[in-house]
Length: 432
Ligand SMILES: Cc1cc2nc3c(=O)[nH]c(=O)nc-3n(C[C@H](O)[C@H](O)[C@H](O)COP(=O)(O)OP(=O)(O)OC[C@H]3O[C@@H](n4cnc5c(N)ncnc54)[C@H](O)[C@@H]3O)c2cc1C
Image (cartoon, rainbow, N blue to C red; front, side):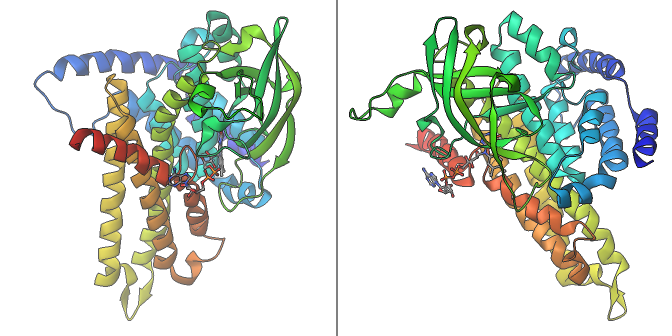
């Protein structure tokens, strides 16, 4: 019955994929005008096109009306509801930047960022599913795929097949390119052997982008790892090729988002499934992770805002000593600081996204945005629990979930130390 009700709710609020595309065409026209008008005019960082505002509004409605009622059950069952994934496809949110000829919505990068931010206000697990699929998997096929790969993979990725990005391994996390998964050529195939760990979406996915090394090493020879990077290659695989899910992790947060260990045992991948050319995997992974970090920043900012939205109204309703607890200066100043921190992090994130769209360098800005957004998310969601007192500590309000979910922002797509390392390199280059 609930499903029928949510479908009905969805039908009224849902723009069809065609209408999303039509609005995106309008967006592109608007953007072109904006660029022309922008000569001599400097827009504020939170200036959005009509199209971006419309997209934000429709994702907000979908999140509040369709996702929100399922958040607690999905968290407690540690499982993504398939109806939510179906809804994301129906909304056109799983092919946001994919061209219309492949069934996508053909919207901008900023639109993807807005969708990730809005979904995270309600559920950071749903947000990361959409984020990894769009900013990593779809981006790799759009940017480096051959015409045949785009025809095959972009079409299914925008029409029901979920994607996973498989780089990390048990022994290579921050040092991601020390990966041990190997691929050797045999006839018209590559034979892939190894394991991947921590793979988001893997439980639901049909399409897997797997990074493996094609350079052979012998254990007795000490290898310069930078030489090894030259062999790293990105392979597009589908589940039926023999991907084994060895383990599904039980986690502190984003529990509805699947995180799995995968094994490949002499898995045959056709040679036409090499994405971007043999040896191009390092460049592909580095470039798309720079972009992906803006997505994680958006997820963390949405999360912080979601926790803030739940807790702050309560502080004005809850009375102690004859007044609303939110009006005591000790509380009001904390709330004011949190509102400022969220805005500052959001502007860093929008700036990185706009720089990417404008074709400017954005590696440093993306690292800064992810670093600050994950710090703010953790701080604000922790404070939100305290602002709500005892009820904030219960699972019923959902506030504590934001705090559990926030911890991952400092870990995946490069830990906070790795972001600092990136920023430090830029600073050193500039000042030394
Ligand atoms: C829920 C979840 C989902 C994930 N999803 C994916 C996915 O979809 N695809 C994928 O490929 N990977 C994924 N990952 C993996 C993630 O990117 C790694 O966990 C992350 O890069 C850190 O690697 P590690 O866990 O091995 O930690 P380690 O690299 O072992 O780091 C441990 C600690 O050492 C610090 N450290 C390491 N090196 C340095 C250094 N040079 N300087 C200073 N400090 C350092 C780190 O900052 C960290 O605090 C996911 C992880 C999780 C937990």
